[in-house]
Image 1 (cartoon, rainbow, N blue to C red):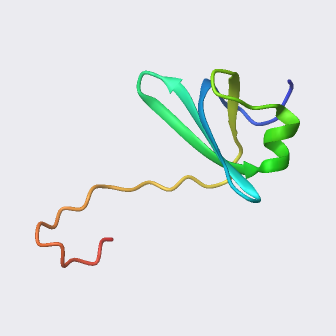
Image 2: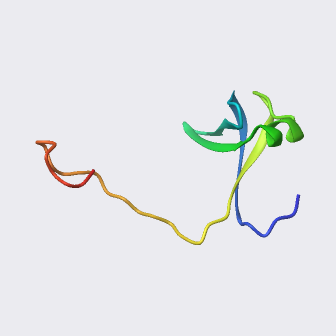
Length: 80
């Protein structure tokens, strides 16, 4: 598999939740790190994805968003 995307995270599939059109795939990256992806049911079938399989999360993005924890204690702030 050769790709231009440099963010390739190898892991084991924990779970595949199939919906009518899309499915959620949960990938265990190790050390308590889990990433999920929403992909089509057709892709699940084409790739024959199932729990226990090795797979890669491939991230191609032009933006990264950074967040910080909310510092308010009364829950009435506008940071949510």
